[in-house]
Amino acid sequence: MHKVKLLTKEPITHNVNRYITQKPENYEFTPGQATEVAINKLSWEKQKRPFTFTNLNSDKTLEFVIKSYDPKIYQDHDGMTWELSKLEPGDELLVDDPWGTISYQGPGLFIAGGAGITPFLAIFNNLHKSDKIKNNKLIFSNKTARDIIYEQELKNYFNQHNLMLTLTQTKNKNYEHGRIDEVKIRKLVSDFKKEKFYVCGPPSLVKDIKATLKNLGANANSLVFEK
Image (cartoon, rainbow, N blue to C red; front, side, top):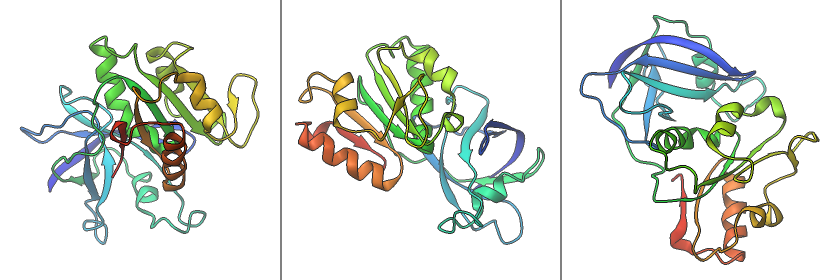
């Protein structure tokens, strides 16, 4: 584990923060990779949890975008992200070596639910900088508009025909409404045999999307999802 200092912490949404830390010497990762992170405090130093890098390896720091879950409300969460949200610059984190999760394998449709967008952020950033993002598309589902992570950045990456933002709990004329389903996916995909699909989100969403894509004729080898 590498000991790094937290340099900055800033809110992205009402319950999501952006954390920037020191980067260990000779530390390298690729877009879509993650690492295990712990808080260097008594009783927390062994509580490692996986988080995805949201910046690029060429940066001189590490960046993570993490949703905070209050354990009093989300009883299936152990409080680690809530403890992270209390940290201040100067506090220390323990960062393990990078490991692979979702890797970019060519243009396709990205499907994300909530914080499931985070493994895609570095990929989008890298594709945008190398001018290779134009043939990719994104469907991003959230409960409400205030939950959307980096909405403006995503609109800068994708044109209006390649980006669909949908809300499941509120209706708003500026967004699609409802869960990601066959109808929504068909709006962005014409050939399910040739398209690649990148899926990340809550387990229930991933399970439903995989079943939907299979029913639509997607090739099993074209599905890329977090494992």
